[in-house]
Image (cartoon, rainbow, N blue to C red; front, top):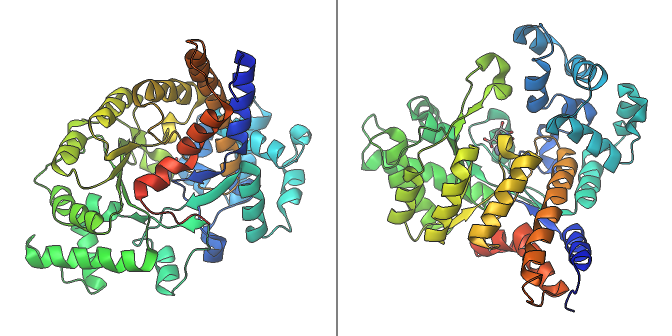
Amino acid sequence: MTITTEKGIRKTVEEAIDNQPITDIHTHLFSPNFGDILLWDIDELLTYHYLVAEVMRWTDMDAASFWRLNKKEQAELIWQKLFIERTPVSEAARGVLTTLQEMGIDPKTKNLDTYRAEFAGRTAEAQVQAVMEQANVSNIVMTNDPFDEQERAIWLDGMKPQDNFHAVLRIDPLLNDFENTKESLRAWGYDIQEKWNEQSIAEVNRFLEDWIGMMSPLYMAVSLPPSFAYPEDSDRGRIIRDCILPVTKKHNIPFALMIGVKKRVNPDLIDAGDFVGKADISALENLLAENQENKFLVTMLSRENQHELAVLARKFRHLMVFGCWWFMNNPVIVNEVTRMRMELLNTSFIPQHSDARVLEQVVYKWKHTKTVLKDVLTEKYEDVRSTGWPVTKEDIEKDVAALFQENFWNFLEKDFRR
Ligand code: HDL
Ligand code: ZN
């Protein structure tokens, strides 16, 4: 059915976006059977590291004193400083309010205990179900770290994620801190030599194969500093060349690079202490040019890298650009970057992931993104319709399905959706 008015375009775009199930391709959530490492409820929402960074600007309490507070006390300080004493206009602060609103909890009381009462008595399994239905997220892709003692034990116990949760093998310590990580690998029975030789390569690959066997990861992922270079005569350069690229190619899984994070510039803030920097995208250009049979999922943290990343994707179809990551996930930037990506890549990219660390963030992060995407897509389809080109409801629904999940599963060439 061809749409004949701009109003019709907006209505069709809004319905297509609201009705489209989403695969959330990067989160820090866990299948509820993994236990307490899945974070959820109002106190976890309020103590999200984004809000920790923001509250430290409104208190003269030092970071050490803040971390000595218990979770509820931290949440109460954040509530007082960012919600009661001033209006919660920041993206992370209003996200808490959007979450309450979407969960049918009236924010008007401004009373933290009334919200806590709403979350009390719920189970993680029921909350996962409720959140996924509320956000229309049908599949959640996790971040799974074999170097995290707590999570490592869960996998070694034989635990597997429930159907609509999918694993990702995250390897930051292997690539960014091999000097220390090789000691862990040796302790786990991998005979890593001091020299980078065939034995060392084989043992790192055995480690990767063991975890691929346990996790069946959809992709292998790492976050990288703005200084990331490739090729490079370094531990990271050699492990990427000799291990990551051949092993991901063998298993036909993408190598996901999240480039531009300068870790712990303020270490006292812990997860809230990471910064951003513009990266030299030639590292990615070299990886893509030299490895045309590998697949690369890439997101970059600096706004200044976004245009060149989108142009690079025009050169190499084995590069799938994804998300507005972290400091990029603000409406003003999501709007600008999504428009630019559509103008350069048509719909051959993945516009967003939630990066949720707390379960209920899926609700607000997707609600906020959908609001922006409705504006952007309405404008883009109206631009096409105004040329006289017939735009139909089916066209828009097909494109929205591609953006919200088909591009991801087709890029993987496997479909584990349930
Ligand atoms: O490295 C990552 O996956 C980042 O997303 C970090 O986890 C970061 O702390 C974060 O949560 N950003 O949203
Ligand atoms: Zn993340």
